[in-house]
Length: 275
Image 1 (cartoon, rainbow, N blue to C red):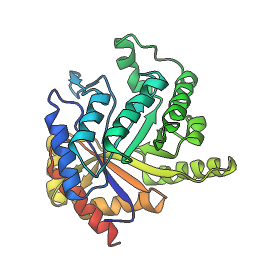
Image 2: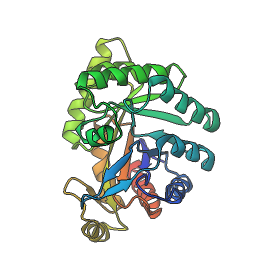
Image 3: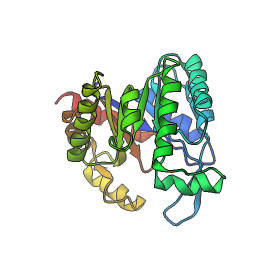
């Protein structure tokens, strides 16, 4: 479809799991390369209210059963929520159902995770302890033969980046992604490793054209950092990440329950493929 693989994040913050399955099916039908689930206990809405979260392991099982060919992954599973052996068994079980189309995106958690962790009695820990947990999880999951990506700033997660098969960066501008991607490549080269898979992800509001996307973004109160546009504008924006070395780009629609986003993103991918 394009020189880069295109992924879509799924509507994880809902009571009902059916929209998540519907969007995953739409993504597969549209020819996208991957769908990715979040791993949270809850989230806060813009008005401060709590948004429920679909449990990650159950979500991955549903995706394995309800899709046939598309890559299914996490962006990202939090290493501090489960012991490394438990997390490895989750991914191994999903892989036994879905085959070799599973990607384990793993993260250490950041300050935004603190409230979730402490609400449920988990220790948030220090940055060092969270990265230690991340390294252990990467090693445990990789030992099961499952591709692992590490999410986050490459300096803060450097030890885990060297252990993983890939790296993901969420939400940064193309120039920053290019700098950090070079940091990853240089560090892995110095350690005698290949560059690994480089990927970028970020929020978006898609529309049939730029005007429709802007109107949608206004209705959704999308932040200024959100990528907004029709397929051609989105393709142009994604090209900057591809030029910086991204082999995957993964978009998270603000209105994530709408299956139409899969078709719009696929259209952007077709434009990207044509150069």
